[in-house]
Amino acid sequence: SLQYVWIKQSNHCKIIFYAPWCGYCKKLEPVWYDVGAELKSSGSPVRVGKMDGTAYSGMSSEFGVRGYPTIKLLKGDLAYNYKGPRTKDDIVEFANRVAGPAVRALPSKQMFDHMMKRHDVLFVYFGGESPLKEKYIDMAAELIVYTYFFSASEDVLPESVTLPELPSVVVFKDGAYFTYDEYVDGGLSSWVNKERFQSYLQIDGFTLYELGETGTVYILYSTNLLTSTTLIQRVAKEYREHFNRDFQFGHMDGNDYINSLIMGEVSVPSIIILNTSNEQYFLPSEPVETLEQLVHFINSVLDGSAQAQGGDGMFQRVKRVAFDAKSTIMSVFRSSPVLGCFLFGLPLGVISLMCYGICTAESDDGQEDMELMKRDDEEEEDDEEDEPRQAPGELEGPEEDGENEEEEEQEKNPDDKKAD
Image 1 (cartoon, rainbow, N blue to C red):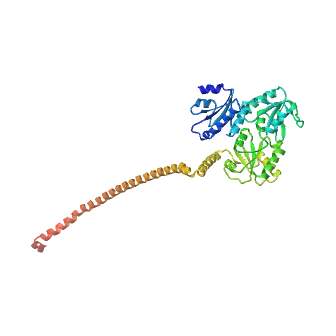
Image 2 (tube, helix red, strand yellow):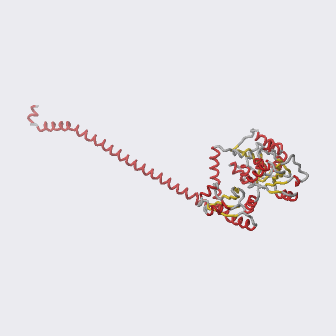
């Protein structure tokens, strides 16, 4: 209960929920101590702590903890989940960003230029008090876990930037700027969630997961090759108005992650489009060497003429389970053959012995049954043999009577024989 009050009364508290048996938690523990030391030395208002989620299951349920480790930053009545890379610098940067105000002011051109150089993607609200600003502040309080949000007056803008109207929400990225249009772009949160990524970026497993959460339908990326990446960069820039709503563009080093994603083998280099809504993927039917061929491939996916592979059907789910099991076993054997033999060889040996014992027991029972059947057959044969032996004995009676008559005739008086 004391820990519960401590958490609730802290204005800024960063806490990690862990389990004693969790290997990832043990790996994160030294990083977590470094995070606490860094925030304390920098004078951050964030207090760092940890809690055994298995010992305080009620607390874990209240904060929606579903796995370990789970990192949350508590700010007033709000709890922010951290889903970024588990490194000291990334966690500290997250804590400093969320602990501060949801919207930061840019009072001068010098400050504006400094933030432009520091951030690859910069969101700024321009104008005075308005309903749009209220929406912007509410949205920033929700999405501050991902990026920074600023506000400024029109005076801080460089002469090259012209806004169609005030107030406006503008995103600066990729050497250009784009203005939010409520009638075209829909909700402000969905627009910011989409635009918080650069038009072209290097994709890894974490980035791919984040893109899936934003609602991005298609992700087009390639294994790293200069020709392929250059084509995709050109499409991302020159065809932004056509594909930005549905596509995110980028590249990935190597093909290991792609192979695990599609449960197959793709060559290097390759261009692939992934549908995050149903886990389907598309591969070009012919090599893509020109910008026109790449645009045609993208359009074929959008109009449904391209052949889809994969998916989230029952067969693919079973295939995924089998693939993950095989990958896990192979990774264990590669990293530690002795441990792999112990983990998988020992259970297989025990199961083999059990199967052998069961089969042997059944065969022994079968032999006993066969022996019993043989004994019954032999007894029946003996009974059948005894019955024929008695029958001839009964028929020998008349023959004995005939022999006695002959003996009697021989014993007759010789005179009687003469008389005869």
